Length: 160
Ligand code: SF4
Ligand code: SF4
Image 1 (cartoon, rainbow, N blue to C red):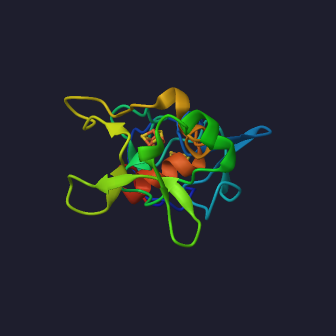
Image 2: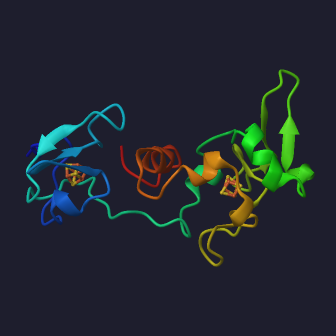
């Protein structure tokens, strides 16, 4: 049986209105799990029963996707340099002028993660050891945003 969104159906799921992939619209919602980006998605009723992709808004501690293997570079802008002044070892300037945060090999054996990321998401929650001074590229990525969910998909934590 298909779900009205076109995504896989599953029995007894919570309503779409409580799903991390739902974006409110006037009297309805858009499911961005079905779209190509933040602005795209199938329109559904708020009380529509959820599909197999339903998930609650994620939290960072057990996830860490955006700081680890989901991406391979986090930009350091000119405006970030003042707060990062005391941590020059965390910044890498590449031959072409691109400036980003230092990365280390992933303990998972594939990809890299930010050198400022601590924890493993299990025994020790993931955390940033310079959270107050992190670059704008980090602070602009909010929990539950499209980029957050996209990062989770890339590391296999969110379906799709
Ligand atoms: S992903 Fe979430 S919002 Fe989209 S159809 Fe499934 S339950 Fe509804
Ligand atoms: S600086 Fe902190 S928030 Fe930014 S990618 Fe690294 S660990 Fe994550």
